[in-house]
Image 1 (tube, rainbow, N blue to C red):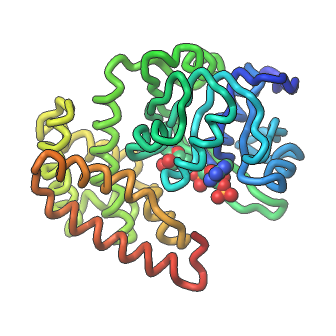
Image 2 (cartoon, rainbow, N blue to C red; image 1 turned 135 degrees about the vertical axis):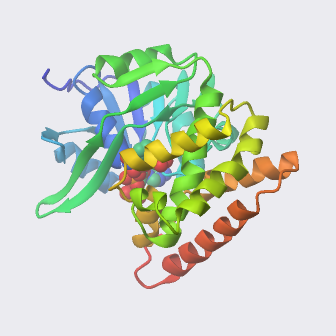
Length: 308
Ligand SMILES: NC(=O)c1ccc[n+]([C@@H]2O[C@H](COP(=O)([O-])OP(=O)(O)OC[C@H]3O[C@@H](n4cnc5c(N)ncnc54)[C@H](OP(=O)(O)O)[C@@H]3O)[C@@H](O)[C@H]2O)c1
């Protein structure tokens, strides 16, 4: 494996906002091929990341900066949770980038564009996986599965850096369709897993399966109106295959609920409800699921253990 690039240029070729599971996973990989700036929430976190954080089997000493003092960068990847998108967009704008790319779950592109006037602001998708865990000496980020990262046209230099770092990354000409296909999976699996407190694989079994399939069938006309071209059989097969491939995983929305954190419900089911309202589609099961997850989230968030 190549040695990490440790120089600190005045202007970074690449920066990542969000020093969490996926952000540090990407940054640690990229650091082997390009100077990469990591933007953490505050100075204390940035100092800890500069001292080193365990990412997989690598001790990664990040070129980390506090959000209040970000460096200039050509390309910025946003990997904060959806609820922090507006704040991340404002940080990204101050970095005077050529392009800002969200790889978040849910639909966050409009929010990003509303708060960031860079020449290019868009959203790709990734099926890379990583999670954070506490260890005796601090924190570790554990990559949990290699996936694929799709970027919109116009982000070729960023795609090239990701690919050089050994990540499967490419430009997807029809990124809107790819985003909708990922949204379909997310609106079906995430809220149900959070509601029932089960792993993804359990959603394929009774009594959850009927709800899972209902959510897919209800979402399809809405997503078709926006350009998704999967028929019902293909849509169900796609969702079932993701649930099977991630059978033992806890969906991120379930992890958030269990930890008393705000979920990405608004960017996932909320986005579908807004599309349905605009197009006059009835999505009663999604609406019910949205109300229920919101209630659970509020109860967890308001509890003494809730951390927001
Ligand atoms: N993890 C995965 O496997 C995976 C896979 C595909 C997609 N995604 C998507 O990728 C995004 C990130 O997920 P994640 O799992 O990496 O989340 P995460 O571990 O919670 O990381 C998010 C990070 O963003 C930081 N942050 C929040 N607001 C910030 C701000 N204003 N300035 C600087 N940093 C800020 C958080 O800081 P604090 O820790 O201080 O709050 C946290 O370190 C989500 O949209 C998720 O759905 C994740």
